[in-house]
Structures are given as C-alpha cells and as structure tokens.
Image (cartoon, rainbow, N blue to C red; front, top):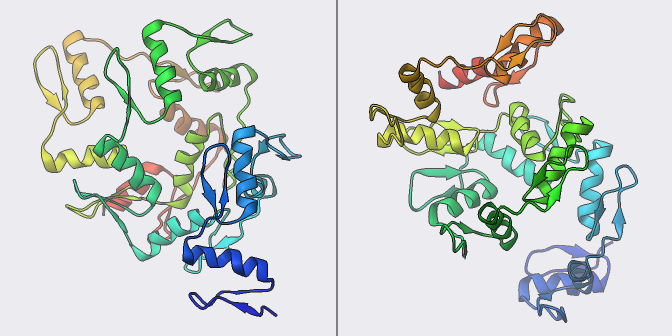
Length: 337
C-alpha cells in the first residue's frame, strides 16, 4: 500500500519522507546546500553523493574489476557490464538494453521521431547527446582559449593538455618503451599496446576493443541506429562525420584542395587518392594476413579478408526491416535503396 499520493503527477509513495522529497520536484525547493560550492539539492542523500566530488572519495568498488565510483547509482549501472543484465526492454521489437537512455534512443528507430532540430542548419538528431555535440560544434560553445594559437576548449584540462603541444612538455612516460605523452589518457591507451589488453567487450558479439569510443562506434553495427538525419533528403547516417560529408552534396562545398593543381574534393580520401596522380606514389600495404601473407592497404580490408580463413560470417541487421547481411557495405547499399 502506498498511502502518500502526489496531487501534481499521481505518483504514490509508501513513506512520508519519500513523498515530501518528491514534492520538491514540483515546488523546485532545494534546501540541502553544499558548503564547498554552494550547489543545492532536493534531498540530503543527493548532497552526500555530491560531496564525494569534493573529497574525491569513491566508496563503491566493483568486486569484478576494481573500478570505484562516487555515487551508488553509477556503481549499480556499471555492474550490469559484468552481469550482462539488460532490464530495459523495447516493446516494439523485444530488444533489451542496459540503460534507459539507450532504450529511448533506440525507440526512435521505430517511431522515426527526430525531436532535436538545429536552428542554424539542416541537421536533426534523435538523441540529446548527438544533438548537444553538434550544437557545440555549430555555435562554438568553448570559453577557454589558447593564447598561442587561438584554439578554444570547453574544459580546462583539455586546454592544459593542448598547451603542451606548444611547450613540447610530455610528462607521462611509458615504463616499457620510454615513449612520452602529453596526457595521462594517451599513456593509458598506449600501455594497452604492450599488454595486448582489450578491456572493452561488445556484449552482442564478444569482440573486444582497447577504447570505449571504438566500442561505442562498433555497437552501432548491432543496434542499426542512424541518429543523424539530413532534412534535405531524409537520408540517415550512423555518424555525424558521414552526415557532414553528405551535406556537401547539397551545398556543393569542396573543402579539400590539391596544392598541385587546385582541384577540390568533398572528401579527404578522394584528395589523397588524387594526389598520387601527381607523385606516382603507390600506397604502402602495411597490413599482412598471418595465414597467407597477402597484404592490404587498409586494416578494414585485412579484417574482411581474414574471414576467408576463419569462416566467420558477421551479421549486419537492418533496423528498419530486420533483413540480415554479411558485410557492412552490403547493408549500406540496402539502406540507400
């Protein structure tokens, strides 16, 4: 029984304390104030969790990987990586997700909804993260400027690391090969090349990656999400870079110019390919197959070739009709039809 009912939204609560804290959502009251920064919160538990930011205390530690968290909700959300729990289920197709935000983004695949529209250009997005990233690029929401080159940044830590490109400072050194880096994150990623560790694993196919950004990019293969939409022709894309490249077909913009003959191109790849007509340079084939020693220019070409030996047949699924394809290029061709 939940005797305490909110007259504004109808939500019910078992305990009066929970009810009164909930009421502050509607009244806007935030009586719990942080003594360090003055930020106010609706509940005391929120203030306590916030306090860990100042003390840098991380009391919630994962027993599987040792990662620590300041806030309990972040800890429990992280635990799903190990347990494989996906509590958020799509009513449209039955697909499950670890996080509610991922389900909301996925749901737009079914509804076709594009709730985030840029006032300055043709771009629409179906998730706030993609839209916010686009707006930062569009309006230049960067307040920290480098005095040497004028480049701007949103975070002071990014500016500090950038300044080292001018000073030449590389304070982070690898103990295995003595190579130095401007940032701690760059060193951490480099260390994985020595250990061979790939800590970020795709729960759908088991493929592992060294970086979370690479894993997130890979996950789109399984979800079929194409959150970047062109309002000129309704074409959709998985990545903002692909949309920006496509928009040049409408604007006619060709930003990549050959310094030898002045010819311009919409894609950097086309310029690189064209430049070889002046130098007679043949691209080096740096990726060799360990099974038959065949060599390739691009790593993606080697990956695709290796399937001849392994017999692997990856599945690329269309989010619109559920049709399956053995290669991403075939799926992309299908999307264009």
